[in-house]
Structures are given as C-alpha cells and as structure tokens.
Image 1 (cartoon, rainbow, N blue to C red):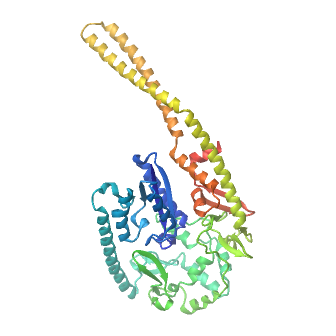
Image 2 (cartoon, rainbow, N blue to C red; image 1 turned 90 degrees about the vertical axis):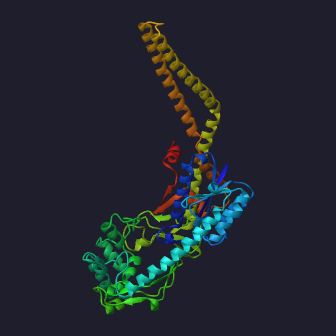
Image 3 (tube, rainbow, N blue to C red; image 1 turned 90 degrees about the horizontal axis):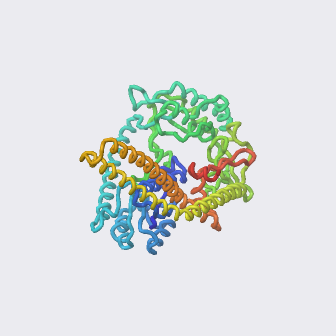
Length: 527
C-alpha cells in the first residue's frame, strides 16, 4: 500500500516574510509525517512526497502536483494527505471537483489534516459540496469582516492615533494611552545618535561599526530582552549585529519627526496576504502626533546619506542546488549570492560591520557544491551500506522470529496450565482430598514454575521487539531516498534540503554540514 504527501509553498504565502522556503516546507513535512506515524492504520505503508516550492494554489499548473495526479491515474497510490485545503487548491470550485468527481473515480482517499477532513467519512454522500459551501461562506464572511476592521482602523489613523501592534524602535506606548507613543529612554538616544552621525557625513558602514564597537543591541535583540515571552524575532541570532539594513530602516522612518505614517503598503485581499509597497504620494501622514526625536529638516538632511549605487550581481534564480542552505559560520546568517566574471560566489554581508565574520573572503559556488555534494554522497553511501546489512540480518532472522513465536505460544500455554493446576490443587485441598502440607508443597512448586515461565515469556518478547525494531519503516524510507540520490544524474535543491538543514561556512573554506538525520541515524552512521 502506498500513500502520497502533498506539500506546497507559494511565493504569495505570508510566512515567506519571516521564514525561508525550506523551513516552511520542513514544517509541513513534519506535520504530515507525524500524522502518518500516529495513525496505526498507516503502519507499513510506503510514503512518497510531492513538493511544489514557489507555485500558486490557484491552478493546477504545478509540476509535482501534475506528476502526483498522473501516478494516481496509474493506480500507484490509494491515499493523498495534505496539510489543509489551501495547500491543495485555493480555488474552492477546483477543490469540490476533486473531492466530488476526480478522486472518487480514481478510488483515491483524501485527507486534509488541519481541516479534519477524511473522504472515508463521507462515502456515498456529497461532502465535497458541503466543504465547498463552507469554503465560500467563510471566504465571504472573512471579506466582510476585513472591510469593517479596515474602515475602523482608517478612522483611527486619520485622527492621528497609533494603531500598530509594535512601536518603532526609539518609542514605546504611553502606559496610560496605548494609542499614543512616547520616547523610549533607552533607545531614543540611539536613534538620535544615528541621525547625528548621518548628518555629520558618516557612511552607513561607519555608523554600523561604531554601534557594534559600543556593544549596542540591535532593535530585534532589544525587543527580545524586553518581551521574552513574545514569538516576535524569536529566530534572531545572538551574533546578529548592526548593518546597512537596520540602519537604513531607522534613517528612513518618517515617524521620528513626530508624525504617524500609514498606508505605506497595500494589502491586496484576504486570500492573498502578500502586500505591495505604495508610492509615497499615497501614504497617510499625520504630523504632530507624538514627540519628535529629530526635526523634519534633520530628517531630510540625513537622507543625503543614501546614494544611487549600481546594483551588484545578486542572483535571483528561483532554483539552484544550494538555495537557502549556505550560512556564515561566525554569525549564523545567510550568505549573499553574487556574480563576478561569470562565476558565482557567496560572501557574508556582516563582515563589513564586525570583526568576527570572514572579511574579504569569497566562497565560490562551484567549490561549495563539490564539497557539499561529495560529503553527502559519502554519508549516504555509508548509510545505504549500513541499512543493507541490517536488512540482510533481518532476513536471516525471519526463521528465528517464527521459532520465537512458537516458543512464546508454548510458554503462554504453560502459564495457563500452571494457573489451572493451582486452582485444581486448591479445590482438592478444600474437598479434603489432599492434606494441608501437600497443598502448600504443590503451591510452592507451581509458584516457582510460574516465576520462571513469566521470566521466559518476557525474555522472548524482548527478543521479538528487538527484531521488529530492526525492520524500521523510517529507516527503509530513508534508505530508498538515499539510493535515489546516489543514482541521480542531476542534484536539485529539493534533494539537498531533504537531507541537509544548513551548511555553515567558516574562514579558510572550512565547512560544517548539519544533516536532518535523527540521533538514532547519526549513531548508526558513527558505529
């Protein structure tokens, strides 16, 4: 029996603003595999994944989705599981078509984990249309509620009230009025210092280096210290430092002039949370809402720090083998990918702002690919060899396991006979057929035999359990994926992400690869 797991990540997904694609896919994979492993009915099933990374769910123009449907048409699997309906299709009419017509015709069972939907619960009914109607009702209700909320917020914005969840760095909410901001005594001086340095002609790199030398917390670290229970910025590295990104954010915030600024971005619609930046002419700017940290004149003068520089050769390819894997070993942040003289390389952007990251070192992609892929090949070759040995040993013990099952049944039968003999002995003693001494002697002998029989039963059960653990479904699946990787003519990013979590690069081209293997697998490889 075989089942398919379908995973999709769209470039329009809101979580891409906060997480890398691999992390979101990994989260879906973890959820689905936990669901499968927790259901006894799926034990022993072959599991295959189909992953669409960066494809919209509004249509079926998705390579992995189409491959999966073709396999289903060939009868290769009987079950499809996905995280929720939106991962499968965002168009409710398409969902209904698959639930009502296509999947029943193909004899395919469909499960949406987060929606609590299992097509097996609706055999002979029109649950597909029921799901579609719920989808439509929820969609219209959400749109109506969204309009009402946005209208109320816009009225507050026009009155100059602060309606954000988190204040800009340098400000804090007034304890007596959450819609009014006041300067934060800890961070307001830092904002003013940044603007002064910019007005004095210091470049962004020089400003960042000065703040780092003074060991001043960056905004995200300051927020985490003040709000330890919040999930915001929870992934911020402790090594993260001031750089051109957070300096630019501060120097470009018009709120420091005392104004409230809204509508910087346009939120398209409720079913597409991706927002777009609006032209400054469309911003809603309400001056004099709170105490200014800099004057309007100083703010405008500080903007002269930004120069029109020619764009560097940053790669924007959608897919390449090392995508989202390469991290700086010193600071833990993602390295930037660039082109120079028709050769692609990585470098750590933080090296310009601290003395920890490898400064001036370029790590060429073809060299990194060679090291990473060869290291993974060696690891997987060892793993496949270990798995083959385990499977061979398992095959040799099949007969032994059968003998143990026979022995176990015999011991269980002896235990029952022992219990029966104890009952019969007591009945004879009660009827006066045997004396008290004979009864006690019989009882002691049977009790001793029972102890030995129970010990023998436990020993056989332990041995059988050890044999069953050798026949590990997860290990077999991993071995199958490893074998496919070793036979592949072309290595893709999806293949590497399945086995590798991160590749940390240190000065001198020293590389540290963190694999996604469990502790048990790593122990197996180390033996």
